[in-house]
Image (tube, rainbow, N blue to C red; front, side, top):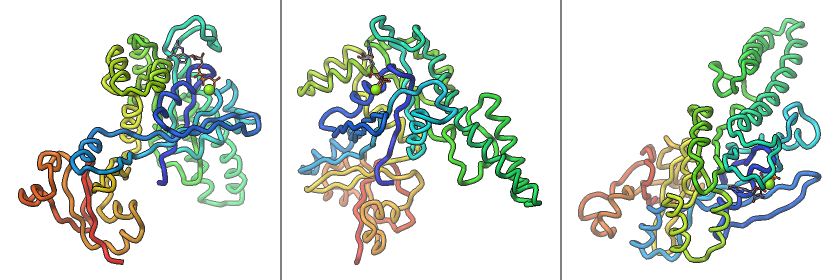
Length: 356
Ligand SMILES: Nc1nc2c(ncn2[C@@H]2O[C@H](COP(=O)(O)OP(=O)(O)OP(=O)(O)O)[C@@H](O)[C@H]2O)c(=O)[nH]1
Ligand SMILES: [Mg+2]
């Protein structure tokens, strides 16, 4: 994966762009452009990590390079989009290329901010958007079933079997459940939206909107809900003074900005971990799929490093912080030598010896 791409969706005017701004603050590059009738914002957000900050201090690294997430803020989802055509169809098409969906739901009450239905009801809003995604998938599965039925009439056994499977999937969708909870394997090449990894962001007021967020959590079930006071944070993002920003965050009961929280949720959702490379030049974080080996990690850094992999020196972040210096880590025997099959753990610091 080059950079993780996350698409922001939600009803019109619920604060998607405010969430986007809150998440992509502090030097993040934001470009705004209009493509036909869709105007979208694309921004790269760094994923701050306190462990990497500490390591950079220990090693006196000149630069700290965090992992990044690309966020794409598109126009609001209009009812009926799921049926395709016009802005809705294009909008949903944009989503298909994303690694994950971040669904923004308004919980903040504010009579001055227009709501498409004239009332603030996070569960009804979330349901309305989820229903559009479900309808879009429904249309795709239905079209595929029609095509398979034609092939099936010529006696194509595989087409008949897939058609039967898709009939069951369609019934599942008709019951209001997303494709991600369908118990059978969905054939490759069917690009559905309700199989995409999903996170909810509750766009809250400064008070946190406890009751509304709890209701949304209940609706979301196993899917994570991350509260973000978007308007408040987007304003904080304009402050240059870190301490001042921290003080404002503390006032609403937060110890950190929302980006690390959202990023951690997205990493969990996508089964991603991070490993670090550190030295006097830079301290750098690399996202990696959980369950990857040392040679996979080497390949993230450079394909040559994977090809010429000899061995990796590995130490966990906590051990390194306890040891403070490489020399001490060696003295305590905590700098392990690992082979190409070693499974990387979250927070491993690795140094690959390779030969090209
Ligand atoms: N009070 C309050 N207002 C907010 C909050 N978040 C967004 N708003 C306001 O809601 C309005 C819409 O915010 P946007 O971020 O533009 O919403 P959007 O979902 O991107 O809107 P569209 O792109 O037009 O669909 C603006 O007037 C914001 O100032 C919030 O947390 N609290
Ligand atoms: Mg917007």
